[in-house]
Amino acid sequence: MESLQLHSCTALEHLEIQYCSSLVSLEGLRSLVNLKHLKILYSPALGSLTPLESYEPIEGISSHSYELFPALESLEVHDLSPLNTSFCKGLTCLRSLMLIELESTRLTDEQERALLLLRSLQELCFVECEDLVHLPAGLHGLHSLNTLKITCCNSISGLPKEGLPPCNKQARGRN
Image (cartoon, rainbow, N blue to C red; front, side):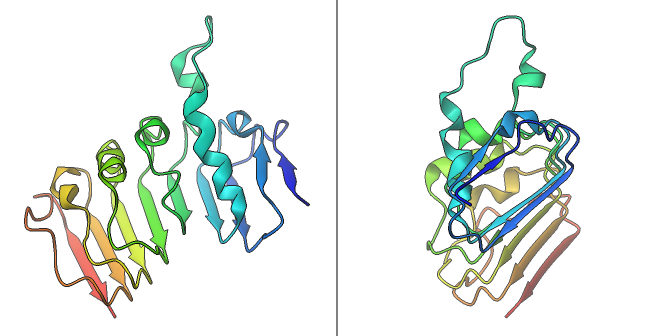
């Protein structure tokens, strides 16, 4: 299967796609208005999330109903490509972001700006990101963040020099 049609899945709340190497396209993503939990790992389908910045608002449709995943609460990905400002500015309900096995040494400036748009983010997890050397410098700007988990990220030597948000209740690291 190369494409997954989601147009009629308006009630879908959980979507998990893992290790689907032939699945390259997710169609009808804008129909997933009730989606709360999204997990896309090790699948080229993750690329379906990136071209969304080309969508323009349509007259007569409220901006809230036109956002991608307006109810999304948790997101798990292994690739940072969808983490851009166009994608993140619509994730107003996102509370948990898990980044798994990232292959970069740091987030790009664009990705760090996008991360700061996640105003409701309470939990940020980095899991098995062995190449990651630097945590995002702007973590202190995530005022809702209360849990930071770093698991098996051996190259990270410490927290950003700007620190964590004052309300951070739990920072955990494990190698």
